[in-house]
Length: 387
Length: 96
Image 1 (cartoon, each protein chain N blue to C red):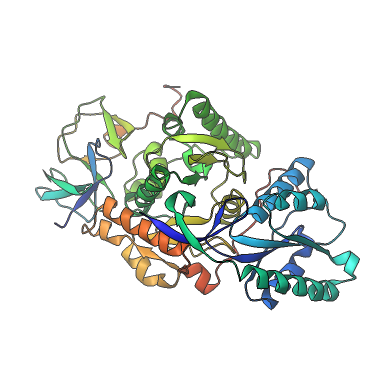
Image 2 (image 1 turned 45 degrees about the horizontal axis):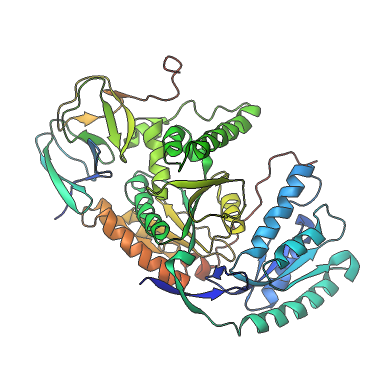
């Protein structure tokens, strides 16, 4: 039986890490959140550029995403760092995260009288939280407790032939075991959205997928950009891609062959098991944050040329099918599937290796982004203007 | 066995070259854990596709187990498959 050593939380979710999370509630509190995290071993900070002077819809989204991040099972407890005058709804965020049963505290820079005092008080609180968190023991957890986030980026010709279908194999195995897999990057569906929609468990979900792609395209059109025209690009055609369908399929191959059970807005935690789609752009800070807010406890990331980004509290497993990238960007890569391109390993074989690696990382093996500290790719995806 | 090309989906009728392949070469294309052999009629460079069986004009090109376009000419087994002999079925005003 496939198992990993995880941290079972009071609400039943399982963490693959056991950090104390320090979440900034507004861009203006980032410095203090970062400073406290630097002071305390076992704590990590999440910072972003939102939380004030935005449309009400975006503020609601920031509230929801902060609740999602705080509720992620990789965090044992949470300290919110507030400036005091921001638009985010602090009480609502605290109440939202506390529903998981974990400890949540708030410190407010304007109430404490400046950064130095807030840092001192925050550091003391977080030290206590780390002390409590460190006594939580891991237990054997089934593969079904994995909530896998799917991502690809910095692509090349090898990616759609090796790393993305390999993630697809692992995703299918996790879903078949009763786990969850979250596909974002709706931008990548363009050209193959009819195919993604056909993978929906029913017609309603299929229509939701098409509507989500149309909405994503509409956002670009609203600022005068046609995302569909000119695809595949001249460089893609030179590399061997003939049609937009082929290009898009290379990216969505990472979702495997399981039926899509539901469609969610950005950062919303799935309430069903299986493969689900979440609205998200493809850019690293926004999608990694969205996957973390959706409760992903591990992310698999396919890259051709070598994307180094990780996330503060969700391990990101990087795999590449490009032998040169594996050599040159070795510091940032967790697994090579270059054997597929060299003709010596099959996609199913590499998929099994990835599954083993996922279980090792879920049990505590550290990813390259964690080791190198390349974990600051984070921001909340918002839709409206900054006011 | 070492493969020269890869077939991603079981139903695919194209394989993708894993290195620069030459016309007349008998190549091995991996499909899952097994493989199939095709003699190329065109040179096919790394990342480009060739037909693993004859594809008639108007028929679908299948990769990743999905339709990625349609043949605009008869494509013999082992021929290069690209923008010169297939077309997208998407984003086209005349098909909308």
